[in-house]
Length: 257
Image (tube, rainbow, N blue to C red; front, top):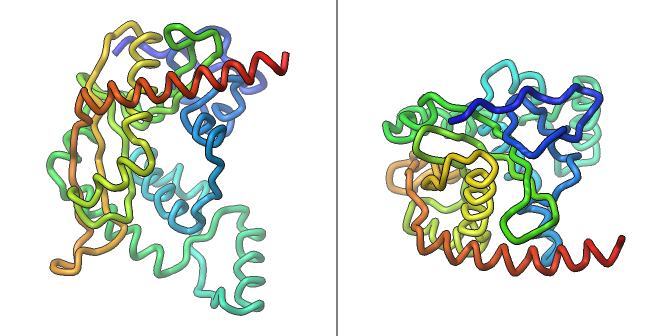
């Protein structure tokens, strides 16, 4: 992997050039004047945040890819609050206000810990996570054939592959096919892979998912973990889809000028 650019000064959230950047805070990355795959999703089909399920995925992501310090800076273990009551909701909100962090409830903490250990105990997942490379890689540039600037935040760039950590409600790899189709993970693979290949000059790399179920398997009571590479045919179909969306987005973007 070619060396990423140094991060821009903290008072300048716009990257000075098209490129691959390391150590950019996520909040700054999201302010870059460029379209992401999530922006394209919201452009055609606005969705509401998933609440606590999304939070659990975010905490696990931070633990595995950013470490204990980064995790503790954003999240705090809370006492038990009954969120079915006004008093419980008020106490929970007061705890977050006092700590200045997102609160993790005791039951959620146990769930996250079990998922973390499941991933760390999975040989193939650990080989990718612990391999030499960069985490939280921010990329900005123009996809071939388009003038609008595009951006991507890649979980892991390793020698020979790009990898994304997925927390899913599906219990195993077979059921995960439903989520791949529903959330268009092949579009993400194509968008991230194409943008990184064009900007970095390193060529196209396989896109690999590291998946962990948020639901214990009914037979083993364990959180299943699996690693799977996105097929090139799936990526090709995803590329066609994001190109169609970018055409619509670029047309709307240009109308506003």
